[in-house]
Amino acid sequence: MRRQLLFLGLTLLLANIALGQCDKQLKLKCEKATRMNADGSMGEDQDVHVDIVFSKDSINLAVTMQDGRQMEIHGFIREKDCKMNSAFTEGSMLAKVNGIMLRDGTEKEEKLIFTLEAKNGKFKLFGAKDVAPGADPEKMYFEIMDQKQD
Image (cartoon, rainbow, N blue to C red; front, side, top):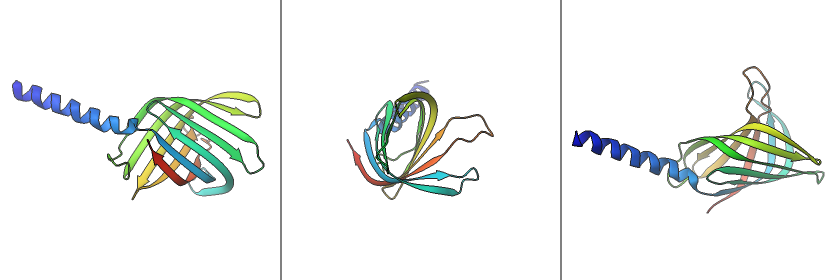
């Protein structure tokens, strides 16, 4: 019985450590975003400046379009699946977000999915609407130029 309790306690501790590493604040900068086609191939590039901040329970994107228009997306993470190493150089994190999109003076609620991938210390970020199967998720790829962990 003691052995089982020890094993359970160790399992819970390791799970808490693994989930806690995705509680770091991560700041990313992007200068180009690409609309993904429905088949997963890369579509049209867009020159944009995006400041992205992941925190323990939220995500914020401040977007400046090439023509100077601005858009903001912010929301609370309702579900997170973290498979990052402790140095945040390898792995992935999936975040399902209840988001609010502010554009041209209008506010729109969206359910969004963000996937952050790290390989050799370089990040890739994908964002999409959380839609029913068969619907267009309007998936975007954000080319990350700079990153900082707090």
